[in-house]
Image (cartoon, rainbow, N blue to C red; front, side):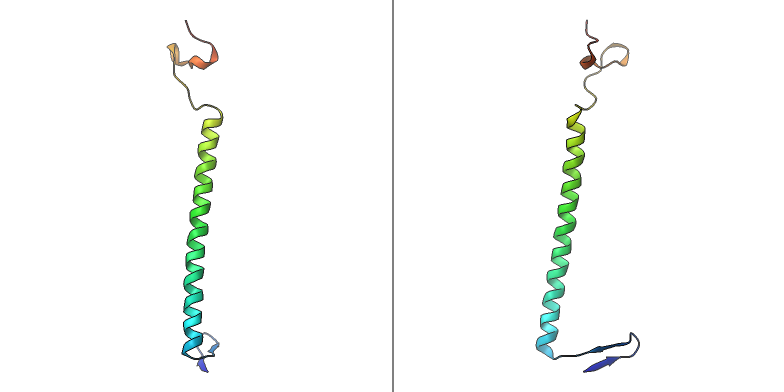
Length: 73
């Protein structure tokens, strides 16, 4: 057992436990990175869905009116 007085903690275990701790810490870092990437992909997909759902700006006709609203000669 190793006391850490500054942080009011005590470390218990040997080299095998410390290695297990390091492995779990790395797994958590990887999991957090995967979660962040998945959330970013989800946001990107939702943003692209929103733009394509209403067709974007469409093409612009005379006087700035879009063609898709029936202003076509």
